Image (cartoon, rainbow, N blue to C red; front, top):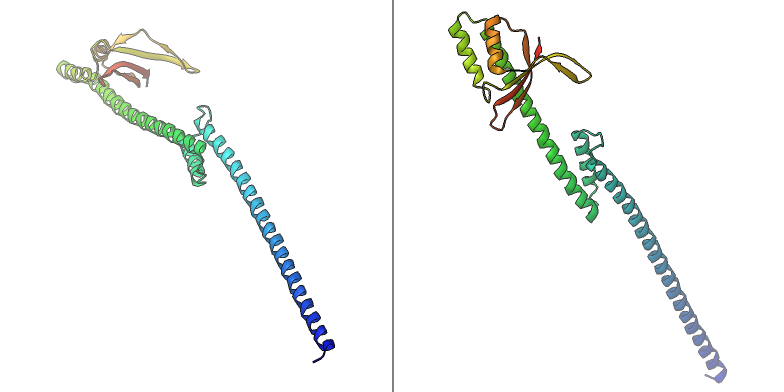
Length: 220
């Protein structure tokens, strides 16, 4: 082997190594650019997600504050549907969570108030029916003893024989005009004497012991 044969071999080997080095550098450069591009995309996606959640949080807070507004005009059922919709978003935001607790407490109070009102309405209806039956029994009693017995039983529903009785003679636009006030004892005696019952129970007011302290009647 002479010198001319050796030199080309070494030169060729050197060129191949240099080429490989260039290719490696290029590959690393491309990989770095690709990695930076992926990081940028991930960052942009995270930013968009954060922006979307911020919008949801603000919307949820607005909805919850509306539920806390006493003048919202929403029914209890509508409020509960909105609350459940907000809770289903699972935002896990401290302010939203605090508002959810406030709304839950408020709606629980409203539900209890409605149930109490319904119970009172049912109680009033039952008491009104009983009183109307007593009125009819007293007016139609076949004997003085029978009338007096029904009077005494009816009086047991009242706080005292002097419980106020108001008789509505006219009403318009929510305003009521009453006849001269009387007491339950006097009114029951009046029914007994007249032997007729022309009025029916319109409103009942109870005292703290659940006895009737005031009664409103209206012409049948």
